[in-house]
Image 1 (cartoon, helix red, strand yellow):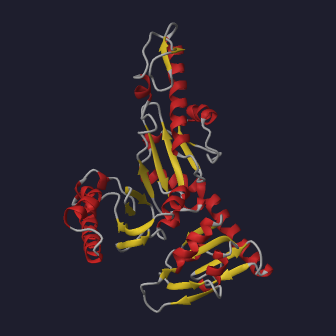
Image 2 (cartoon, helix red, strand yellow):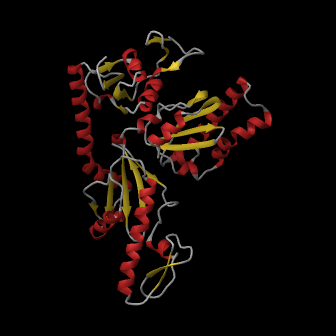
Image 3 (cartoon, rainbow, N blue to C red):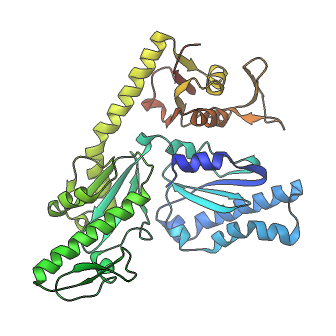
Length: 387
């Protein structure tokens, strides 16, 4: 999951050999099974190799060594069976980081050198971009990242036990579980028992809830997206009692998760979350209307860039189909110069605005045209104060 913390960290990275790759991917179907996505990615890696060789950054074995994390990924068939709509891959001297993004792209993008290209991934910065679903039963659980149009499973079981049996493998004992310190069991306790099987089962459930919610709290630290819990009603109250994540949705979907396919799960949870998303969109439109009245707004790159530089932007709004605009910021005149085509000194002005907005504590919203305020066709912003 790509978070604002990831953006902030990656935004600080730059160098002659940095690599940014975005490729369209598929969750399932023929493109997944026949290796189509892997082939597309392999072609992108070939382009990276060509650009690094042309620039003279690496040669021969040193280039092979630098690109090894990317080439290894092209051979990892299991990796390609767990993708979303877009794969973002960032290679630096510190290694490779990948993110499966639930945002649609239609073409491969490769950038080598300079700052990492983060504009496509920035669509995930807004809390309203997605929501989470956690399905829970004693026998299994699962986690999903969902948007208005999609649902993607996310592997979480390096942090969250997959079922109650996995939790209880850590413990030894008789018929009830009475904790006492000592040993290495994951929570610092060893359990031994006495009492009824029913008592033991209740205690097993409690331990399971605590281990699951502790893992989810760690996984979701710093996130702001709403999470919908899907489980039998008997589990929901106890789960929420131990769950610390502040954005868990008030209502849970009280049904056995095994009764729903992922598509049905998305349909049912979207019914619950849609009013929340629609309210956010309405509030954004009202805020922009108010800003126009107060003259605390900017519309178009020429006005947005200086506002971003000066820390004025409260909310930056971008059409998700906005094309790259090249140019440079003229600091002496606090103005923008546009380039008809990319030059050696060109900046991606949209990404420049995003980076400066985030750096100065503003919010970034990337949405389809119909969900943006009227009059915002490319990029606009509400401002903290008037010029």
